[in-house]
Image 1: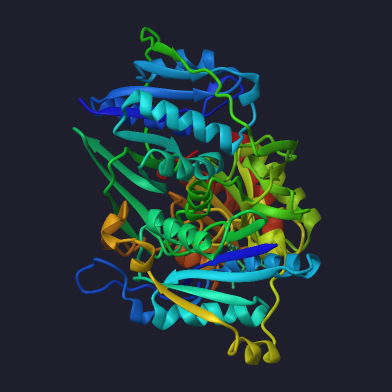
Image 2: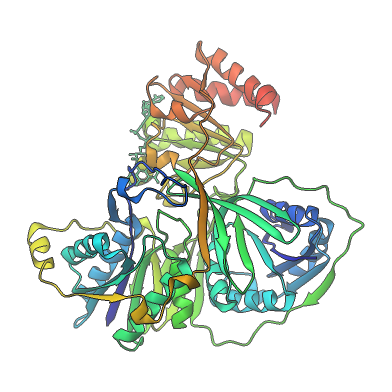
Length: 260
Length: 321
Ligand SMILES: Cc1cc2nc3c(=O)[nH]c(=O)nc-3n(C[C@H](O)[C@H](O)[C@H](O)COP(=O)(O)OP(=O)(O)OC[C@H]3O[C@@H](n4cnc5c(N)ncnc54)[C@H](O)[C@@H]3O)c2cc1C
Protein backbone atom coordinates (compact mmCIF):
# COMPACT_ATOMS: atom_id res chain seq x y z
CA UNK A 1 0.00 0.00 0.00
CA UNK A 2 1.20 3.55 -0.76
CA UNK A 3 0.77 5.67 2.30
CA UNK A 4 1.18 9.44 2.15
CA UNK A 5 1.08 11.88 5.03
CA UNK A 6 0.77 15.60 4.29
CA UNK A 7 2.18 17.68 7.10
CA UNK A 8 2.64 21.36 7.82
CA UNK A 9 5.07 23.20 10.02
CA UNK A 10 3.37 25.75 12.29
CA UNK A 11 4.32 28.05 15.18
CA UNK A 12 4.53 26.22 18.49
CA UNK A 13 1.37 26.73 20.56
CA UNK A 14 3.39 28.70 23.16
CA UNK A 15 4.86 31.08 20.54
CA UNK A 16 4.19 34.78 20.94
CA UNK A 17 2.88 36.23 17.70
CA UNK A 18 4.22 39.61 16.58
CA UNK A 19 3.43 41.46 13.39
CA UNK A 20 5.91 42.64 10.77
CA UNK A 21 6.45 46.37 10.31
CA UNK A 22 3.66 47.02 7.80
CA UNK A 23 1.22 44.52 9.39
CA UNK A 24 1.10 42.56 6.14
CA UNK A 25 2.05 39.30 7.87
CA UNK A 26 3.39 38.00 11.16
CA UNK A 27 7.06 38.36 12.08
CA UNK A 28 8.20 34.83 11.22
CA UNK A 29 11.64 35.34 12.73
CA UNK A 30 10.09 35.49 16.21
CA UNK A 31 8.56 32.04 15.92
CA UNK A 32 9.54 28.55 17.08
CA UNK A 33 8.39 26.07 14.43
CA UNK A 34 6.99 22.62 15.12
CA UNK A 35 5.01 19.96 13.29
CA UNK A 36 1.27 20.78 13.40
CA UNK A 37 -0.12 18.77 16.40
CA UNK A 38 -2.83 16.99 14.37
CA UNK A 39 -0.25 16.02 11.75
CA UNK A 40 1.61 14.09 14.44
CA UNK A 41 -1.53 11.94 14.79
CA UNK A 42 -1.59 11.53 11.01
CA UNK A 43 2.06 10.37 10.93
CA UNK A 44 1.44 7.98 13.82
CA UNK A 45 -1.55 6.38 12.11
CA UNK A 46 0.45 5.97 8.90
CA UNK A 47 3.28 4.21 10.70
CA UNK A 48 0.81 1.92 12.50
CA UNK A 49 -0.84 1.08 9.18
CA UNK A 50 2.50 0.35 7.55
CA UNK A 51 3.35 -2.13 10.30
CA UNK A 52 0.10 -4.01 9.70
CA UNK A 53 0.27 -4.01 5.90
CA UNK A 54 3.30 -5.82 4.57
CA UNK A 55 5.19 -4.10 1.76
CA UNK A 56 3.80 -0.65 2.52
CA UNK A 57 5.79 2.55 2.35
CA UNK A 58 5.13 5.81 4.18
CA UNK A 59 5.99 9.02 2.32
CA UNK A 60 5.76 12.39 4.04
CA UNK A 61 5.04 15.50 1.97
CA UNK A 62 5.19 19.09 3.10
CA UNK A 63 4.84 22.39 1.30
CA UNK A 64 6.82 25.19 2.93
CA UNK A 65 10.07 27.14 2.99
CA UNK A 66 13.01 24.78 2.60
CA UNK A 67 15.13 26.41 5.27
CA UNK A 68 12.78 25.44 8.08
CA UNK A 69 10.33 22.82 6.76
CA UNK A 70 13.09 20.21 6.33
CA UNK A 71 13.18 19.89 10.11
CA UNK A 72 9.51 18.87 10.33
CA UNK A 73 10.09 16.27 7.60
CA UNK A 74 13.11 14.87 9.47
CA UNK A 75 10.97 14.61 12.61
CA UNK A 76 8.39 12.53 10.73
CA UNK A 77 11.16 10.35 9.28
CA UNK A 78 12.57 9.89 12.77
CA UNK A 79 9.14 8.70 13.94
CA UNK A 80 9.41 5.93 11.34
CA UNK A 81 8.35 7.16 7.90
CA UNK A 82 10.39 5.90 4.93
CA UNK A 83 10.98 8.91 2.75
CA UNK A 84 9.96 12.53 2.35
CA UNK A 85 9.25 15.11 -0.30
CA UNK A 86 9.70 18.81 0.30
CA UNK A 87 7.82 21.19 -1.96
CA UNK A 88 9.76 24.40 -1.47
CA UNK A 89 7.28 27.24 -1.11
CA UNK A 90 6.72 30.59 0.58
CA UNK A 91 5.76 31.20 4.23
CA UNK A 92 2.16 31.62 3.14
CA UNK A 93 0.59 29.71 0.29
CA UNK A 94 -3.15 29.83 -0.40
CA UNK A 95 -4.99 26.59 0.48
CA UNK A 96 -6.10 26.00 -3.11
CA UNK A 97 -2.45 25.95 -4.22
CA UNK A 98 -1.24 23.84 -1.30
CA UNK A 99 -3.91 21.25 -2.10
CA UNK A 100 -2.97 21.34 -5.78
CA UNK A 101 0.74 20.98 -5.00
CA UNK A 102 0.08 17.97 -2.76
CA UNK A 103 -2.24 16.38 -5.34
CA UNK A 104 0.29 16.83 -8.15
CA UNK A 105 3.13 15.51 -6.04
CA UNK A 106 1.16 12.38 -5.18
CA UNK A 107 0.16 11.90 -8.82
CA UNK A 108 3.77 12.27 -9.95
CA UNK A 109 4.81 9.61 -7.46
CA UNK A 110 2.58 7.09 -9.15
CA UNK A 111 -1.01 6.09 -9.53
CA UNK A 112 -3.44 6.76 -6.73
CA UNK A 113 -4.95 3.30 -6.46
CA UNK A 114 -4.21 1.28 -3.34
CA UNK A 115 -3.30 4.56 -1.70
CA UNK A 116 -4.03 5.85 1.77
CA UNK A 117 -3.53 9.55 2.43
CA UNK A 118 -3.49 11.09 5.90
CA UNK A 119 -3.50 14.75 6.95
CA UNK A 120 -4.29 16.56 10.19
CA UNK A 121 -7.84 17.87 10.63
CA UNK A 122 -6.57 21.45 10.58
CA UNK A 123 -3.36 23.42 10.83
CA UNK A 124 -3.30 25.52 13.97
CA UNK A 125 -1.77 28.55 12.20
CA UNK A 126 -4.46 29.57 9.69
CA UNK A 127 -7.14 27.25 11.10
CA UNK A 128 -8.94 26.96 7.78
CA UNK A 129 -9.34 23.12 7.77
CA UNK A 130 -9.64 22.99 4.01
CA UNK A 131 -6.54 21.44 2.42
CA UNK A 132 -7.51 17.84 3.22
CA UNK A 133 -10.92 18.05 1.51
CA UNK A 134 -9.51 20.08 -1.39
CA UNK A 135 -6.79 17.48 -1.93
CA UNK A 136 -9.44 14.74 -2.00
CA UNK A 137 -11.46 16.67 -4.57
CA UNK A 138 -8.39 17.19 -6.80
CA UNK A 139 -7.61 13.46 -6.68
CA UNK A 140 -11.29 12.53 -6.99
CA UNK A 141 -11.11 10.42 -3.83
CA UNK A 142 -13.56 10.16 -0.93
CA UNK A 143 -12.54 11.83 2.31
CA UNK A 144 -13.33 11.91 6.02
CA UNK A 145 -12.39 14.68 8.44
CA UNK A 146 -12.13 14.85 12.24
CA UNK A 147 -11.38 11.12 12.37
CA UNK A 148 -10.91 9.47 15.76
CA UNK A 149 -10.90 5.78 14.71
CA UNK A 150 -9.44 4.24 11.58
CA UNK A 151 -9.43 0.74 10.12
CA UNK A 152 -8.75 -0.42 6.60
CA UNK A 153 -8.58 -3.54 4.49
CA UNK A 154 -7.23 -1.56 1.56
CA UNK A 155 -10.43 -2.04 -0.42
CA UNK A 156 -12.61 -0.70 2.35
CA UNK A 157 -11.82 1.83 5.04
CA UNK A 158 -14.01 2.33 8.09
CA UNK A 159 -13.62 5.47 10.17
CA UNK A 160 -15.34 7.04 13.11
CA UNK A 161 -15.60 10.80 12.89
CA UNK A 162 -16.88 13.46 15.20
CA UNK A 163 -19.95 15.40 14.13
CA UNK A 164 -22.04 18.12 15.80
CA UNK A 165 -23.08 17.99 19.43
CA UNK A 166 -20.60 15.32 20.57
CA UNK A 167 -22.15 12.75 18.23
CA UNK A 168 -20.09 10.38 16.11
CA UNK A 169 -20.67 8.80 12.77
CA UNK A 170 -19.16 5.67 11.35
CA UNK A 171 -18.52 5.91 7.64
CA UNK A 172 -17.09 3.59 5.05
CA UNK A 173 -14.87 4.77 2.22
CA UNK A 174 -14.31 2.60 -0.85
CA UNK A 175 -10.76 2.29 -2.16
CA UNK A 176 -8.10 4.99 -1.88
CA UNK A 177 -9.10 7.90 0.32
CA UNK A 178 -8.02 10.92 2.34
CA UNK A 179 -8.39 10.89 6.11
CA UNK A 180 -7.91 13.95 8.36
CA UNK A 181 -6.81 12.99 11.87
CA UNK A 182 -8.29 14.30 15.09
CA UNK A 183 -6.41 14.27 18.41
CA UNK A 184 -8.11 11.18 19.83
CA UNK A 185 -7.05 8.96 16.91
CA UNK A 186 -3.90 7.72 18.65
CA UNK A 187 -0.99 8.82 20.81
CA UNK A 188 1.88 9.94 18.58
CA UNK A 189 5.20 8.33 19.40
CA UNK A 190 8.29 10.37 20.20
CA UNK A 191 11.19 10.05 17.81
CA UNK A 192 13.81 7.80 19.46
CA UNK A 193 17.50 8.64 19.34
CA UNK A 194 18.28 5.76 16.92
CA UNK A 195 15.24 6.94 14.93
CA UNK A 196 16.70 10.43 14.69
CA UNK A 197 20.08 9.04 13.57
CA UNK A 198 18.42 6.86 10.91
CA UNK A 199 16.26 9.74 9.70
CA UNK A 200 19.35 11.67 8.63
CA UNK A 201 20.07 9.03 5.99
CA UNK A 202 16.53 8.57 4.73
CA UNK A 203 15.74 9.97 1.25
CA UNK A 204 14.39 13.52 1.17
CA UNK A 205 13.52 14.79 -2.27
CA UNK A 206 13.17 18.49 -3.00
CA UNK A 207 10.93 19.99 -5.65
CA UNK A 208 9.68 23.49 -6.45
CA UNK A 209 6.19 24.81 -6.98
CA UNK A 210 7.21 25.68 -10.54
CA UNK A 211 8.16 22.02 -11.18
CA UNK A 212 4.50 21.29 -10.48
CA UNK A 213 3.29 24.09 -12.75
CA UNK A 214 2.03 26.12 -9.82
CA UNK A 215 2.39 29.87 -9.60
CA UNK A 216 1.95 31.73 -6.34
CA UNK A 217 -0.10 34.36 -8.18
CA UNK A 218 -2.99 31.91 -8.54
CA UNK A 219 -3.65 31.87 -4.81
CA UNK A 220 -7.39 32.30 -4.27
CA UNK A 221 -7.22 33.44 -0.65
CA UNK A 222 -4.76 35.72 1.09
CA UNK A 223 -4.59 37.92 4.16
CA UNK A 224 -3.87 41.59 4.82
CA UNK A 225 -4.29 44.21 7.54
CA UNK A 226 -3.10 41.96 10.36
CA UNK A 227 -4.03 43.15 13.85
CA UNK A 228 -3.18 42.09 17.36
CA UNK A 229 -6.27 41.67 19.53
CA UNK A 230 -7.44 44.78 21.34
CA UNK A 231 -6.49 44.95 25.01
CA UNK A 232 -9.30 43.62 27.12
CA UNK A 233 -10.48 45.94 29.90
CA UNK A 234 -9.15 44.69 33.24
CA UNK A 235 -11.06 41.94 34.99
CA UNK A 236 -13.65 43.00 37.56
CA UNK A 237 -13.08 40.86 40.66
CA UNK A 238 -16.03 40.01 42.88
CA UNK A 239 -15.11 39.79 46.55
CA UNK A 240 -16.87 38.33 49.55
CA UNK A 241 -18.17 34.91 50.53
CA UNK A 242 -19.64 32.48 48.01
CA UNK A 243 -23.34 33.40 48.47
CA UNK A 244 -22.64 37.13 48.11
CA UNK A 245 -20.27 36.55 45.17
CA UNK A 246 -22.88 34.47 43.36
CA UNK A 247 -25.57 37.10 43.91
CA UNK A 248 -23.33 39.92 42.73
CA UNK A 249 -22.21 38.01 39.63
CA UNK A 250 -25.75 37.20 38.55
CA UNK A 251 -26.72 40.84 39.00
CA UNK A 252 -23.72 42.02 36.94
CA UNK A 253 -24.46 39.56 34.16
CA UNK A 254 -28.08 40.63 34.04
CA UNK A 255 -27.91 44.39 34.59
CA UNK A 256 -24.46 45.42 33.48
CA UNK A 257 -23.30 42.96 30.79
CA UNK A 258 -26.92 42.17 29.83
CA UNK A 259 -26.12 38.64 28.69
CA UNK A 260 -28.71 36.82 30.83
CA UNK B 1 -27.62 44.02 -7.36
CA UNK B 2 -25.29 41.42 -5.94
CA UNK B 3 -26.50 37.89 -5.38
CA UNK B 4 -26.01 36.17 -2.06
CA UNK B 5 -26.75 32.52 -1.40
CA UNK B 6 -27.17 31.41 2.22
CA UNK B 7 -26.80 27.72 3.09
CA UNK B 8 -29.38 27.00 5.81
CA UNK B 9 -28.93 24.09 8.17
CA UNK B 10 -31.98 23.20 10.21
CA UNK B 11 -32.92 21.11 13.19
CA UNK B 12 -36.29 20.11 14.70
CA UNK B 13 -38.18 22.11 12.09
CA UNK B 14 -36.26 25.34 12.61
CA UNK B 15 -33.50 26.98 10.60
CA UNK B 16 -30.47 27.28 12.86
CA UNK B 17 -29.73 30.68 14.36
CA UNK B 18 -26.39 31.02 12.58
CA UNK B 19 -28.15 30.85 9.20
CA UNK B 20 -30.83 33.34 10.30
CA UNK B 21 -28.06 35.79 11.21
CA UNK B 22 -26.64 35.43 7.70
CA UNK B 23 -30.00 35.76 5.94
CA UNK B 24 -30.51 38.93 7.98
CA UNK B 25 -27.18 40.56 7.14
CA UNK B 26 -27.60 39.61 3.48
CA UNK B 27 -31.06 41.13 3.37
CA UNK B 28 -29.98 44.30 5.19
CA UNK B 29 -27.22 44.82 2.59
CA UNK B 30 -29.86 45.18 -0.10
CA UNK B 31 -28.61 42.17 -2.05
CA UNK B 32 -30.76 39.62 -3.82
CA UNK B 33 -30.92 36.87 -1.19
CA UNK B 34 -31.33 33.17 -1.94
CA UNK B 35 -31.30 30.13 0.32
CA UNK B 36 -29.96 26.60 -0.19
CA UNK B 37 -31.70 23.95 1.89
CA UNK B 38 -30.90 20.25 1.72
CA UNK B 39 -32.38 17.26 3.52
CA UNK B 40 -35.54 15.71 4.84
CA UNK B 41 -37.91 18.52 5.75
CA UNK B 42 -36.13 21.04 3.49
CA UNK B 43 -39.35 21.99 1.71
CA UNK B 44 -40.88 23.38 4.92
CA UNK B 45 -37.77 25.43 5.62
CA UNK B 46 -37.97 27.40 2.36
CA UNK B 47 -40.74 29.69 3.60
CA UNK B 48 -39.00 30.10 6.92
CA UNK B 49 -35.92 31.38 5.05
CA UNK B 50 -38.22 33.72 3.12
CA UNK B 51 -39.36 35.35 6.37
CA UNK B 52 -35.75 36.44 6.90
CA UNK B 53 -35.19 37.65 3.36
CA UNK B 54 -34.69 34.80 0.87
CA UNK B 55 -36.55 35.59 -2.33
CA UNK B 56 -35.59 32.31 -3.96
CA UNK B 57 -34.90 28.93 -2.36
CA UNK B 58 -33.02 26.00 -3.86
CA UNK B 59 -34.49 22.99 -2.14
CA UNK B 60 -33.52 19.35 -2.23
CA UNK B 61 -36.07 17.34 -0.26
CA UNK B 62 -35.01 13.72 0.01
CA UNK B 63 -34.78 10.95 2.59
CA UNK B 64 -31.40 10.04 1.13
CA UNK B 65 -30.11 13.44 2.19
CA UNK B 66 -31.33 13.35 5.79
CA UNK B 67 -27.78 12.46 6.81
CA UNK B 68 -24.79 14.41 5.57
CA UNK B 69 -22.66 12.64 2.97
CA UNK B 70 -19.67 14.69 1.80
CA UNK B 71 -19.75 13.34 -1.75
CA UNK B 72 -23.43 13.78 -2.54
CA UNK B 73 -23.67 17.10 -0.68
CA UNK B 74 -20.62 18.43 -2.59
CA UNK B 75 -22.34 17.58 -5.82
CA UNK B 76 -25.62 19.22 -4.90
CA UNK B 77 -24.10 22.32 -3.33
CA UNK B 78 -21.82 22.96 -6.33
CA UNK B 79 -24.84 22.56 -8.59
CA UNK B 80 -26.93 25.01 -6.54
CA UNK B 81 -24.12 27.58 -6.49
CA UNK B 82 -23.82 27.40 -10.26
CA UNK B 83 -27.57 27.64 -10.83
CA UNK B 84 -27.92 30.54 -8.40
CA UNK B 85 -25.21 32.66 -10.00
CA UNK B 86 -24.30 33.83 -6.48
CA UNK B 87 -21.22 36.00 -6.04
CA UNK B 88 -21.19 35.42 -2.31
CA UNK B 89 -22.06 32.20 -0.49
CA UNK B 90 -22.66 32.39 3.26
CA UNK B 91 -22.96 29.56 5.75
CA UNK B 92 -22.66 29.17 9.49
CA UNK B 93 -19.24 27.73 10.33
CA UNK B 94 -20.56 24.39 11.58
CA UNK B 95 -18.66 21.11 11.49
CA UNK B 96 -20.76 20.09 8.50
CA UNK B 97 -20.04 23.30 6.59
CA UNK B 98 -16.34 23.11 7.35
CA UNK B 99 -16.22 19.58 5.96
CA UNK B 100 -18.32 20.40 2.90
CA UNK B 101 -17.31 23.76 1.49
CA UNK B 102 -13.58 23.26 0.79
CA UNK B 103 -14.53 20.48 -1.66
CA UNK B 104 -17.28 22.64 -3.11
CA UNK B 105 -14.75 25.47 -3.51
CA UNK B 106 -12.52 23.32 -5.73
CA UNK B 107 -15.50 22.22 -7.83
CA UNK B 108 -16.74 25.78 -8.34
CA UNK B 109 -13.36 27.55 -8.74
CA UNK B 110 -13.99 29.54 -5.62
CA UNK B 111 -12.30 30.02 -2.27
CA UNK B 112 -13.52 29.43 1.24
CA UNK B 113 -12.74 31.15 4.55
CA UNK B 114 -14.10 29.42 7.64
CA UNK B 115 -14.66 30.55 11.22
CA UNK B 116 -14.91 34.22 10.24
CA UNK B 117 -15.88 36.54 13.08
CA UNK B 118 -16.40 39.83 11.28
CA UNK B 119 -18.54 40.30 8.21
CA UNK B 120 -19.66 43.46 6.50
CA UNK B 121 -21.53 43.59 3.23
CA UNK B 122 -22.15 46.80 1.36
CA UNK B 123 -23.05 46.95 -2.28
CA UNK B 124 -21.24 44.06 -3.88
CA UNK B 125 -18.31 44.38 -1.49
CA UNK B 126 -17.72 42.11 1.40
CA UNK B 127 -15.21 42.61 4.20
CA UNK B 128 -14.29 39.60 6.28
CA UNK B 129 -11.88 39.02 9.14
CA UNK B 130 -10.67 35.79 10.70
CA UNK B 131 -8.69 34.95 13.81
CA UNK B 132 -5.31 33.40 13.05
CA UNK B 133 -2.68 31.66 15.16
CA UNK B 134 -5.21 30.60 17.78
CA UNK B 135 -6.63 34.07 18.20
CA UNK B 136 -3.22 35.66 18.75
CA UNK B 137 -3.96 37.95 15.79
CA UNK B 138 -6.66 38.64 13.23
CA UNK B 139 -6.47 39.55 9.56
CA UNK B 140 -8.65 40.60 6.68
CA UNK B 141 -9.42 37.89 4.13
CA UNK B 142 -8.77 38.82 0.51
CA UNK B 143 -10.43 36.69 -2.13
CA UNK B 144 -8.99 36.34 -5.60
CA UNK B 145 -11.18 33.92 -7.46
CA UNK B 146 -13.26 33.63 -10.58
CA UNK B 147 -15.95 31.79 -8.65
CA UNK B 148 -17.97 33.03 -5.67
CA UNK B 149 -16.53 33.94 -2.28
CA UNK B 150 -17.55 31.32 0.24
CA UNK B 151 -17.68 32.68 3.77
CA UNK B 152 -18.32 30.49 6.80
CA UNK B 153 -19.23 32.71 9.70
CA UNK B 154 -19.14 31.90 13.41
CA UNK B 155 -22.59 31.79 14.98
CA UNK B 156 -23.76 34.43 17.52
CA UNK B 157 -21.83 37.32 15.92
CA UNK B 158 -24.68 39.11 14.14
CA UNK B 159 -28.23 40.25 14.94
CA UNK B 160 -31.27 38.42 13.57
CA UNK B 161 -34.04 40.47 11.95
CA UNK B 162 -37.65 40.08 13.05
CA UNK B 163 -39.41 37.52 10.89
CA UNK B 164 -41.66 39.04 8.24
CA UNK B 165 -44.25 36.33 7.70
CA UNK B 166 -45.78 38.19 4.77
CA UNK B 167 -42.75 37.35 2.63
CA UNK B 168 -42.50 34.22 0.54
CA UNK B 169 -39.87 32.59 -1.57
CA UNK B 170 -39.84 31.15 -5.07
CA UNK B 171 -38.88 27.49 -4.69
CA UNK B 172 -36.48 25.88 -7.15
CA UNK B 173 -36.65 22.12 -6.73
CA UNK B 174 -33.30 20.36 -6.99
CA UNK B 175 -33.33 16.66 -7.80
CA UNK B 176 -30.99 14.17 -6.17
CA UNK B 177 -28.06 13.38 -8.46
CA UNK B 178 -27.38 9.82 -9.54
CA UNK B 179 -23.79 9.21 -8.48
CA UNK B 180 -21.90 6.09 -7.60
CA UNK B 181 -20.96 6.96 -4.03
CA UNK B 182 -17.66 5.86 -2.57
CA UNK B 183 -18.71 7.18 0.85
CA UNK B 184 -21.31 5.33 2.92
CA UNK B 185 -22.72 6.37 6.27
CA UNK B 186 -22.89 3.19 8.36
CA UNK B 187 -24.02 4.43 11.73
CA UNK B 188 -24.65 7.58 13.72
CA UNK B 189 -23.89 7.40 17.41
CA UNK B 190 -25.83 10.23 19.04
CA UNK B 191 -24.12 12.12 21.80
CA UNK B 192 -25.85 12.06 25.18
CA UNK B 193 -26.61 15.77 25.00
CA UNK B 194 -29.42 17.37 23.04
CA UNK B 195 -27.79 20.76 23.58
CA UNK B 196 -26.44 23.01 20.88
CA UNK B 197 -22.94 22.20 19.70
CA UNK B 198 -20.20 24.16 21.48
CA UNK B 199 -19.42 26.07 18.29
CA UNK B 200 -23.01 27.34 18.12
CA UNK B 201 -23.78 27.71 21.82
CA UNK B 202 -24.80 31.09 23.18
CA UNK B 203 -23.78 30.16 26.74
CA UNK B 204 -21.05 27.70 27.72
CA UNK B 205 -20.32 26.32 31.18
CA UNK B 206 -16.84 24.86 31.10
CA UNK B 207 -14.86 22.91 33.66
CA UNK B 208 -11.29 21.87 34.36
CA UNK B 209 -9.15 19.88 36.72
CA UNK B 210 -10.32 22.05 39.65
CA UNK B 211 -13.53 19.99 39.70
CA UNK B 212 -11.52 17.07 41.15
CA UNK B 213 -13.23 14.16 39.36
CA UNK B 214 -15.72 13.18 36.68
CA UNK B 215 -18.62 12.81 39.10
CA UNK B 216 -18.29 16.28 40.57
CA UNK B 217 -17.75 17.74 37.08
CA UNK B 218 -21.22 16.55 36.12
CA UNK B 219 -22.95 16.97 39.48
CA UNK B 220 -21.75 20.59 39.82
CA UNK B 221 -21.86 21.81 36.24
CA UNK B 222 -24.88 20.05 34.76
CA UNK B 223 -27.45 21.80 37.01
CA UNK B 224 -25.84 25.17 36.22
CA UNK B 225 -25.79 24.44 32.48
CA UNK B 226 -29.38 23.18 32.52
CA UNK B 227 -30.56 26.30 34.34
CA UNK B 228 -28.90 28.52 31.74
CA UNK B 229 -29.66 26.36 28.71
CA UNK B 230 -25.90 26.22 28.27
CA UNK B 231 -23.66 23.66 26.58
CA UNK B 232 -20.93 21.95 28.66
CA UNK B 233 -17.28 22.46 27.75
CA UNK B 234 -14.00 21.15 29.11
CA UNK B 235 -10.28 21.79 29.33
CA UNK B 236 -7.92 19.36 27.70
CA UNK B 237 -6.66 18.13 31.06
CA UNK B 238 -10.01 16.54 31.88
CA UNK B 239 -10.60 15.29 28.34
CA UNK B 240 -7.26 13.50 28.57
CA UNK B 241 -8.36 12.10 31.95
CA UNK B 242 -11.45 10.65 30.30
CA UNK B 243 -14.09 12.73 32.14
CA UNK B 244 -15.33 14.25 28.89
CA UNK B 245 -15.19 13.43 25.18
CA UNK B 246 -12.87 15.30 22.84
CA UNK B 247 -15.91 16.95 21.27
CA UNK B 248 -16.31 18.90 24.52
CA UNK B 249 -12.77 20.30 24.53
CA UNK B 250 -12.33 24.03 24.10
CA UNK B 251 -9.00 25.33 22.91
CA UNK B 252 -6.35 25.31 20.27
CA UNK B 253 -6.58 21.55 19.78
CA UNK B 254 -10.27 21.47 20.66
CA UNK B 255 -13.10 23.68 19.53
CA UNK B 256 -13.07 27.40 18.87
CA UNK B 257 -16.12 28.89 20.55
CA UNK B 258 -17.80 32.30 20.46
CA UNK B 259 -20.64 32.39 22.99
CA UNK B 260 -21.98 35.56 24.59
CA UNK B 261 -21.18 34.05 28.00
CA UNK B 262 -18.39 31.62 28.90
CA UNK B 263 -18.17 30.45 32.51
CA UNK B 264 -14.82 28.77 33.33
CA UNK B 265 -14.89 26.71 36.52
CA UNK B 266 -11.63 25.36 37.92
CA UNK B 267 -9.72 26.08 34.72
CA UNK B 268 -6.24 27.60 35.02
CA UNK B 269 -6.35 29.42 31.68
CA UNK B 270 -3.40 27.94 29.79
CA UNK B 271 -2.62 29.76 26.55
CA UNK B 272 -3.90 26.79 24.51
CA UNK B 273 -7.25 26.85 26.33
CA UNK B 274 -7.66 30.64 25.97
CA UNK B 275 -6.92 30.24 22.25
CA UNK B 276 -10.30 28.61 21.78
CA UNK B 277 -12.44 31.20 23.52
CA UNK B 278 -11.16 34.64 22.55
CA UNK B 279 -14.37 35.15 20.54
CA UNK B 280 -16.50 35.05 23.73
CA UNK B 281 -18.26 38.27 24.65
CA UNK B 282 -18.22 37.88 28.44
CA UNK B 283 -15.91 35.50 30.28
CA UNK B 284 -16.44 34.55 33.92
CA UNK B 285 -13.73 32.71 35.83
CA UNK B 286 -14.14 30.88 39.12
CA UNK B 287 -10.83 29.68 40.52
CA UNK B 288 -9.42 29.33 44.01
CA UNK B 289 -6.00 30.63 42.94
CA UNK B 290 -6.01 34.47 42.76
CA UNK B 291 -3.00 34.29 40.41
CA UNK B 292 -4.57 31.87 37.93
CA UNK B 293 -3.89 33.21 34.40
CA UNK B 294 -7.58 32.81 33.45
CA UNK B 295 -8.40 35.98 35.42
CA UNK B 296 -6.29 38.11 33.05
CA UNK B 297 -8.59 37.11 30.20
CA UNK B 298 -11.88 37.38 32.08
CA UNK B 299 -14.58 40.00 32.34
CA UNK B 300 -15.61 38.96 35.86
CA UNK B 301 -13.58 36.93 38.32
CA UNK B 302 -14.41 35.10 41.51
CA UNK B 303 -11.65 33.79 43.72
CA UNK B 304 -13.26 30.88 45.45
CA UNK B 305 -13.82 27.14 45.67
CA UNK B 306 -15.97 25.79 42.82
CA UNK B 307 -17.62 23.43 45.29
CA UNK B 308 -18.95 26.46 47.21
CA UNK B 309 -19.51 28.99 44.44
CA UNK B 310 -21.06 26.92 41.64
CA UNK B 311 -24.07 25.56 43.62
CA UNK B 312 -24.79 29.08 44.92
CA UNK B 313 -24.56 30.45 41.41
CA UNK B 314 -27.00 27.82 40.13
CA UNK B 315 -29.39 28.78 42.93
CA UNK B 316 -29.15 32.49 42.10
CA UNK B 317 -29.78 31.89 38.40
CA UNK B 318 -32.76 29.67 39.24
CA UNK B 319 -34.22 32.57 41.21
CA UNK B 320 -34.25 34.90 38.25
CA UNK B 321 -34.74 32.62 35.23
C1 LIG C 1 0.14 21.36 21.94
C2 LIG C 1 -0.79 21.58 23.08
C3 LIG C 1 -2.15 21.77 22.80
C4 LIG C 1 -3.06 21.99 23.85
N1 LIG C 1 -4.38 22.21 23.54
C5 LIG C 1 -5.26 22.48 24.54
C6 LIG C 1 -6.64 22.75 24.27
O1 LIG C 1 -7.08 22.75 23.12
N2 LIG C 1 -7.47 23.02 25.30
C7 LIG C 1 -7.04 23.04 26.61
O2 LIG C 1 -7.86 23.30 27.51
N3 LIG C 1 -5.75 22.76 26.89
C8 LIG C 1 -4.86 22.47 25.90
N4 LIG C 1 -3.57 22.16 26.23
C9 LIG C 1 -3.24 21.91 27.64
C10 LIG C 1 -3.01 23.17 28.43
O3 LIG C 1 -1.66 23.55 28.29
C11 LIG C 1 -3.31 22.91 29.94
O4 LIG C 1 -2.53 21.85 30.39
C12 LIG C 1 -4.78 22.60 30.25
O5 LIG C 1 -5.64 23.53 29.62
C13 LIG C 1 -4.99 22.66 31.74
O6 LIG C 1 -6.29 22.26 32.09
P1 LIG C 1 -6.97 22.74 33.43
O7 LIG C 1 -7.02 24.22 33.46
O8 LIG C 1 -8.24 21.99 33.59
O9 LIG C 1 -5.99 22.15 34.56
P2 LIG C 1 -4.93 22.87 35.48
O10 LIG C 1 -3.98 23.67 34.72
O11 LIG C 1 -4.42 21.81 36.38
O12 LIG C 1 -5.79 23.90 36.33
C14 LIG C 1 -6.72 23.56 37.30
C15 LIG C 1 -7.15 24.86 37.95
O13 LIG C 1 -8.17 24.60 38.88
C16 LIG C 1 -7.99 25.41 40.02
N5 LIG C 1 -8.64 24.71 41.15
C17 LIG C 1 -8.25 23.57 41.75
N6 LIG C 1 -9.15 23.22 42.71
C18 LIG C 1 -10.10 24.17 42.70
C19 LIG C 1 -11.30 24.37 43.44
N7 LIG C 1 -11.71 23.51 44.38
N8 LIG C 1 -12.04 25.48 43.18
C20 LIG C 1 -11.66 26.37 42.23
N9 LIG C 1 -10.56 26.22 41.49
C21 LIG C 1 -9.79 25.13 41.71
C22 LIG C 1 -6.50 25.55 40.16
O14 LIG C 1 -6.19 26.76 40.87
C23 LIG C 1 -6.06 25.60 38.70
O15 LIG C 1 -5.99 26.94 38.24
C24 LIG C 1 -2.62 21.97 25.20
C25 LIG C 1 -1.27 21.77 25.47
C26 LIG C 1 -0.36 21.59 24.43
C27 LIG C 1 1.08 21.42 24.78
